[in-house]
Image (cartoon, rainbow over all chains, first blue to last red; front, side, top):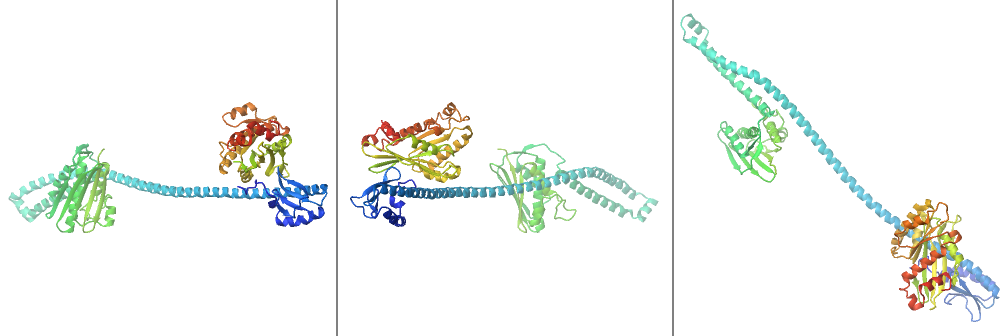
Length: 400
Length: 215
């Protein structure tokens, strides 16, 4: 710390070589020939101090920093020269101290600026990270909002489609009822006409002329066709009603494995040869559900599986597996049928989307399935590869 | 620690405080009032509007019975906020501090800020603020809007430092401030420097020597 501004300055620091060269000759002139300057310890800085010289101390603070000596100058001249030199030294020490202090202060200010700069850089980096983080969070939330909005839109669309379906089913059911009833009554009436066949006389002649044998036979065929058509309409209406949940059933405890068996039983009667069912079911906890709807759900999916194998035109198998874990029940229904294209998968759950010819499918199977799954807070997903097969994965949460 | 060699012991004492609280005036009065064995000239570095730009320096000294020359170098810091770097440089290596506060009620904020800067700067220049010998002087107590003594005492009651109420312009409280600082300095360094054992100086003799009064 000896280089601080507040150190005790030595004479040789205050009077450097150059300034000594300037004031030395002047002082020698003033002091009439002989003059010497020593530092506080008596070391000569100028001239040779002689033993008999007069000596004046140079005191800047408390102690002499040096001495002015002359053997030729009178006492008054020596002390006058000392005062002159002191004035010079005071100006010098003030300048030296001030400039040294100034350097220290500037260095210190620079240090604190550097500290401040480091602090600012650090906080800038922190804010940058924070802003990036915020940006990504906002983006995530916007994405989430958009997704929700899309879901809401879909749900509303589904709801209005459901309402339409329910209304239509109701309106169609009434005329359907009386048309079916009328058709069967009409069949009886045709039977009555048939009795005329055995009659004799002019009636028999007319029967032959009018070829009523053919008409009678064809009428009955037509009536049967109409009845089948009506049945088809009735089935479509029933699908629509199931889709729109018109028939609200009551909730019950049910084992989904039983529901799967039931759905398969319903389907087996209409399953062509070469298509087998394979069960791989683990014990499941009973869950509260709408068994009628669940049956419908499984039936729809299993029917799709069977149809997919049929479309492939080769023997195949429907594998049904189930298992339960802490979260809920997992069910997989896999078929080795035609599979689905990416586009088909995307639209599969939309109501009235079908790949079958008009009249063969309504396009409500998976839409209904999804409605049922969602009504049970579950999830349904499709995984498929064209020509390899399709897997439908279902999940139903169990209460903890 | 004070700088010392075999024959010298030099204490650096710093008058710290807000702008125009009377630090330089303290040194002027001490220069007038004290008569120690050795007293140097007061070196001031004022700008023309009487504001200290760098520092003021008053050297005082006396000789202990052992022959040891004990020197006191009294510095003031520039009070203006802008000169913090200079203030820090002057404060470094201090052995004792007088905090000169302005008793004017309007200056309370400045006092507080300056005191905080003192604590912060002590830490930066490596001084132990907790154990630094210090006296707090409230100057300008004669002002009509000065904060009353009782209120100040109440407010500083928890602080460990002695309080002095002063009017630097007429010299009141100046010498006692310095005396209290000398006592604090002696208690802090006296034993370590063996002032009594080696140099025959007890606290009263130390104070008397510095003030220039017979013990």
